[in-house]
Length: 100
Image 1 (cartoon, helix red, strand yellow):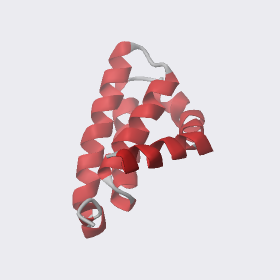
Image 2 (cartoon, rainbow, N blue to C red):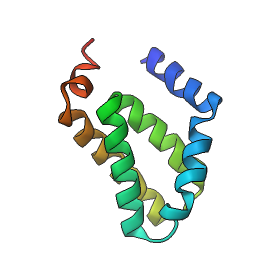
Image 3 (cartoon, rainbow, N blue to C red):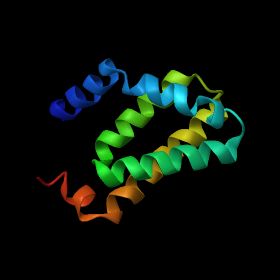
Image 4 (spheres, helix red, strand yellow):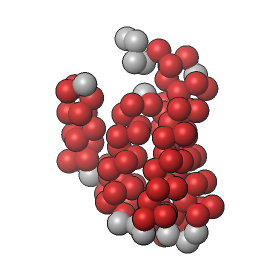
């Protein structure tokens, strides 16, 4: 687990969260449907390529950096978790990444 945290905070220190925040902030703040679609698709694609645990943690840090109102924050976070779970099941790479 420590290795995962080092990777996630390394991505944050490099600026991955800042890029994500600047890119998707305007879309997420519009309404609930956009928050679900943006974070759901973003986390699905990221966990399809990487691993779902890393994706959830990076997504959570990015969502918290945007400073949304509580309802949008909750909806975006749930979309992040569900999208990460779906994306890992789409490919054997995402599913087996944790086992390796």
